[in-house]
Length: 250
Image (cartoon, rainbow, N blue to C red; front, side, top):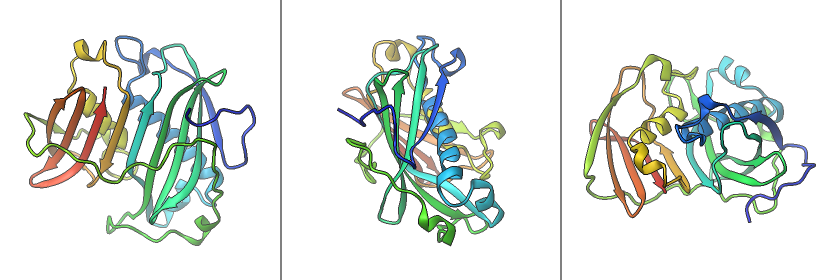
């Protein structure tokens, strides 16, 4: 059934209405999953500034960054070029020490298109380690939406051996204000591994991603990947260290 759409929504839910542009879509007119991640980032930051008791700018001024650690997207139908969509985001209950955000994308008349859950952490910009939340964030508004998505799984199984490998280097235009590669570009990298001939008839059903280590400008990662039963598994490596994991079900 998915996250229930209502015309009116409680305080703490943030909505943004946009029209999907050609630049956000693939050659078949469907939104790219990297663009979904970028839209999630936009509404996360706008929601954070309004409902978290502080702002991203204020966090940065005290040496903290708001970073994503896990995300899981369920696709009911991909938004298409020219379509007007309603994007909603709200703060849910914490999972362990992780901050939780839930999302739902609807058509203008309320058809559910996508729903997402993400887990975030605060990072000390100097040490690059987890940080304690400031006092101002402890009164953030939490909301429960009927049939909202569950928090993302924090662990999934990947193949022991990958059939394929590809190298990818972080470019300067992939770096965000936190000084590392923006989370949406990980999704771009993974989408680039799939041929258009396959994607034409195999739209994604779900995307799970874990951001384990940050990637910095000019770092080159080895993308190990394999496709089994219409499920793409990807592991990003720097040397012997895993930096991210992805599973896309088509």
